Image 1: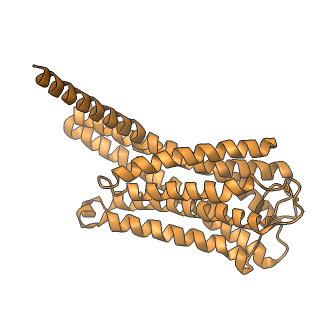
Image 2: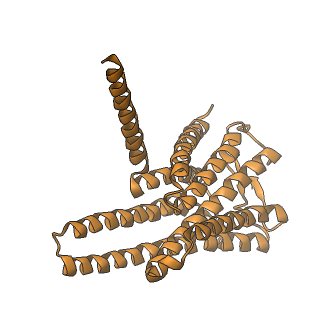
Image 3: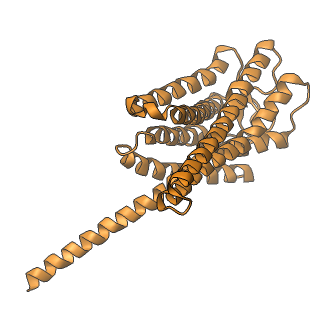
Amino acid sequence: MDAVKIILLIITSIAVLTNGISFYFLYKKQKKNNYVILCINLCVSDILQSVAGYIPALFFDINMQKATTLCKLSAFFIAFPSFTTIAMLSAMALSRMVLLSLCFQSNQINYKKLFIRIATASWIYGFIWAVLPFLGFSSYTLENTRARCSINFSPKKNVEKLYLILLMAFGFVIPLISIIASCLFTARVITTKYKYFCVTYGKDNDETIRYKEKEKKTFFSFLIMVLSFAVCWTPYATIGCFSAFTSFKIPQWLLHVAAFFGKLSALINPFIYYWKDGLFKKCFLNKRLKATKTFLIKNQETNQVDK
């Protein structure tokens, strides 16, 4: 097994493990927080990407001469969840911005239905973008690296160039702008509310301090989301830009770098969950607390029986 496949195996293993753990804890928490519905869908998307997209790539012939059916399907199952995840992250950012601006109407909103609709729309959106290459708007083809298949980044037809341009706009530029706008809006809301709390209750008030810490943590979780999104998808956006607007031949090292960072996106989201609300830590502490209580109760019952 070559170095590329070893790295892929490591990324795949970590992504499946962390997203599986995330799914378990998030599923248990969904009755308490409807927002978790979107996080669960992100986990499913990342697991699908890792299992159906990355694992088949481990069995490709190093010196493939043409795109096989398995290679094309692997590329599809990488693209489909990736587009879905990008759409969902954008929708999460925009919905947060809208809900913050309409906070006075929050009691009139059915959050569960809203988040289910966002998740459903994201899956449909991702599927449409991923299936278009099978319908002639582009194609899944063997990369110059001869190691994997991907969307055709060497377009010859105008329709293929148009697909890349639209993909770059709707799959990178617009989502990135949406997430950044949400971050900036959230920061403004935090500053405004914190000033209100300071004036009303004082800077040293416990509620003011608690609110500041809570909102600062939320803001930094979105900041991490922006940075992770930019780092993971900028290489592919760069390739798309070069391919659509120039005759520049994409070097193999850039294709490898883009594939590596794109695959990292599948294992980053669970760490955003942890940063956001300490999900894993809370769940482990709750389990440990329950286990301790059960142990103490059993000890008390045993002592009573002995007496």
